[in-house]
Length: 139
Image (cartoon, rainbow, N blue to C red; front, top):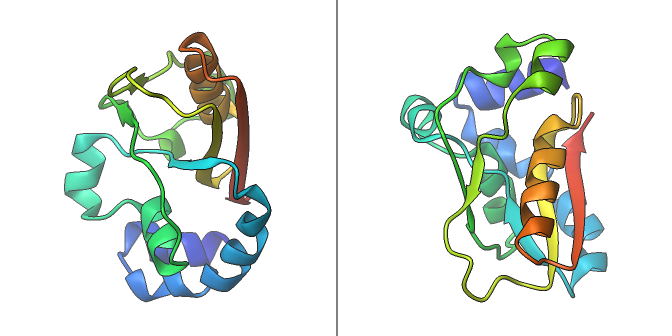
């Protein structure tokens, strides 16, 4: 998986987004009552990478989602150790608090420490989202 994600995310091999499309779609069919919300990239990371690896997975699986989150430019998570990741400030914000869904399934590519998901989970709960779950493609 490490080689797969390295080629996919850092070398831009977009064809790899299709490899897991069917298993992702099969798993997420159980969350039809949830709005899928992909973990966003910072504008800087998106410029460098040219694509969001999470939305590319969802697009390949033919799944709809809502981009309701933004991320500020911060040091890459992959450059931080576990302690640094857990101590990081939450870089996420909600684009608009108007008409947030009641049920959200946060979709991320890799679960390492849980800091990303916890930050988003806390943010959404504070904004009044009643039911927040998460789905990560790899751990």
